[in-house]
Amino acid sequence: MKPPPMEPLATVEEVTVRLGGRPVLERVSVEIGTGEVLGLIGPNGAGKTSLLRVLAGLLKPESGRALVPAGPAAVGYLPQQGEVHWPVSVRHLVSLGRLPHLPPFSRPNRRDLEFIDAALVATDVAHLAERTMSEISGGERARVHLARVLAGSPRLLLADEPVAGLDPRHQLEVMGLLRHQAGEGRGVVLVVHDLALAARFCDRLVLLNGGWVAAEGPPADVLTSELISAVYGVCTETITVEGHQLVLPWRVLGASSHEALAGARQQ
Image 1 (cartoon, helix red, strand yellow):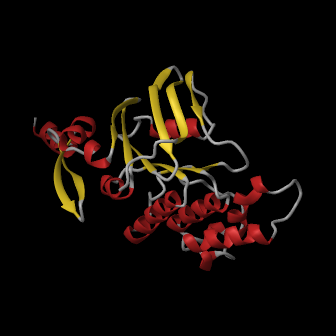
Image 2: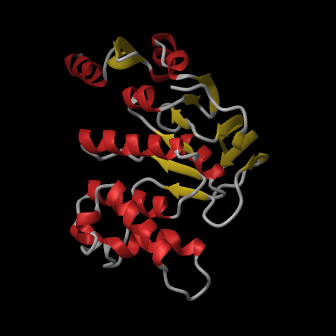
Image 3: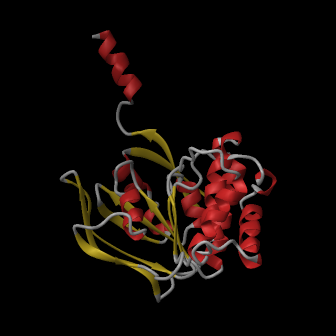
């Protein structure tokens, strides 16, 4: 992995967000550089999706600000498992990613169609192009939604759990595809729960806990047994594969829930 670039593509400065009076982000500052993959990790409810939504312009901070690229489709946002409630074809849904580049009431031109076809191929859904979204599996739908974002060719790509629900092969392919997008000069920010994938494919990680940045830096500096145990409440095992240090959550610290229930029944 290369070191993070010096010139930021996007910046979050001292952002605080409260939802329903509850703090979800507290004075968070992060930079995203051109050509890097930044992974957001942390327990459920740590603020990862909120930070992504701030970058996407979908959530207004109480204080602080997010500085992101401007222009048509400069920012592409892939939410968690978007639902489609009408019988639209895969190709048509992916083509919606080109809308920010089109004049009003115009149809995609040859160049737009090239972007659409390339996105279908890159996400391994070209063979599904004429099927409707209701006719494909959940994992296939996830890849179609990613194709829609890629068709827009954004400078900053934001993905919320892009490999959730995918089989191991497609997890690796999607993460490799996002890594390739960064190599093409884009910035990629993704929420990821699989720490092994985070270690292998991300240049930097931001570990969030309770809305605060608990740690930030290269995967080897963030994915330590001490930090993961403290933040996630798990014991870990560490292995090294092809130069990547992988910290594997292995056992819950203290009594597990089923052990606690068993003890309660015996009382």
